[in-house]
Image 1 (spheres, rainbow, N blue to C red):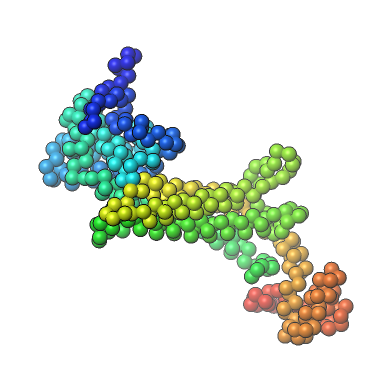
Image 2: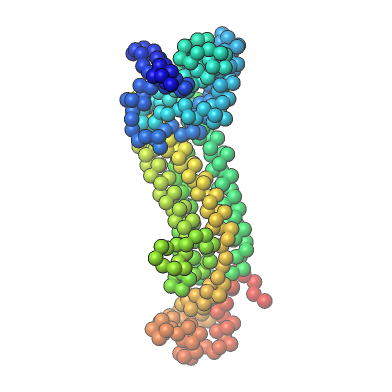
Amino acid sequence: MSAQQKYRIEKDTIGEIEVPADRYWAYFRSLQNFDIGGSTERMPEPLIKAFGVLKKAAATVNINYGLDPKIGKTIIEAADEVIEGKLLDHFPLVVWQTGSGTQTNMNVNEVIANRAIEMLGGQLGSKNPVHPNDHVNMSQSSNDTFPTAMHISASVEINNKLIPALTNLRNALAEKSEAFANIIKIDVLIDSSVKFEALAAHDVIVEVSGALNTVAVSLMKIANDIRFLGSGPRCGLGELSLPENEPGSSIMPGKVNPTQCEAVTMVAAQVMGNNTTISIAGSNGHFELNVFKPVLIKNLLHSVRILADASESFRKNCVVGIKANEKRINEIMNQSLMLVTALNPHIGYDKAAAVAKNAHKNDLTLKESALQLGVLNEEQFNEWVKPEKMLGKVVN
């Protein structure tokens, strides 16, 4: 293949530029000017697909307002391919670009225009019969398209991925709660009405991120509680038995780590970090425009994705396989000095305190200590110290 075949010449308002011949995009200057982070920092796929939804909707409306129906319908067909993810390889731009997302909006316009040109039998880069600005971007601006795509992508990902994953995890935890209900253990015990606000600030994005941050905080606690309760089998709490999914050490044979819990806690930490970035970016809407849009949506979509994936993995590979170690739970409960509270109404605070201190000092059970001090007999202890009573359970 000759050099001429490998590249085509594109023109913009600055001048001519060479573009790979098989690519639908033409805004190659952005790749040169913002070479930051490489391919891992590209605009999130959900945002690109959301742009497809937006451009399809715009073309549908524009057909009624002067857009040639043949061109409009072809734009819709090309936009459908963007929505389906067929053209993702043609969106190489990274998040680190102009703060209004103009380059990505133009990237979308160019890809859809060139794909539409190809569908109509034209030559890539000719801007004929479909023009990226005049037709695909008709009656639009990056300042309205990018925020709209932000909200579309966030809504789709939250509703299609995160909420189902959190619902399934919640149900799995509820099932375990019901299954373990009779085990007694020791415990410590929107449309914006103000259009300028939508340009100058992204409080909705910040608010949604705050909600995700709250979810991350909750998952961090849940995962850590399960990890600690599953510590052992001999030198930890060992109240729960976690699924053994893979070897946990390259040097300690037989060691199994709470890997799913660890993954969830790392994800939670990342979401909290993303929320900090979003908070800072959201606070920098100056006058009529916030120019932190790409990093806002990049971090929000990242939080949604990893929370959804981690929740599903945690449910499938950990929660549903958790078993209660009732023997260990009973051992810990019967050794606990907290049960002395049940003796207060019967022998008084001072004697109960003496029983607890004697048990602790001499490594005795509460029963052994109480009998040694002669403050009650065995029958009385068995009648008064019943953990299930302390939980309000009916005892036969």
